[in-house]
Length: 110
Image (tube, rainbow, N blue to C red; front, side, top):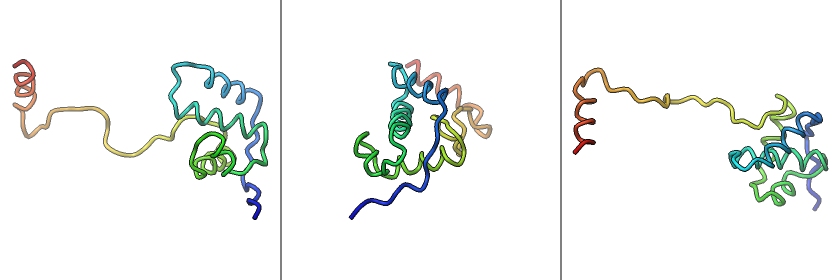
């Protein structure tokens, strides 16, 4: 049984493809960005490729190409994650325990 034709087919500009090639070449790029850049380059070569085939070629789950295809078609090209909600990444001592910071410093010094 043939796979369905992909519903979302993003069109990439030459600048976007140059950026993807640059990310793939960089040695210190985050792995997730490299995977997305490779996916973009693969889909630019063959826009009719199914999500399952793209996932197989890049060793990704088929939902990953499907997700990024939809995002690139509807929102434009980006290799970065969206901002997530949740607790801030910073640490501050609790206000109801003013001695907490001092205890942590003393425990770390011992």
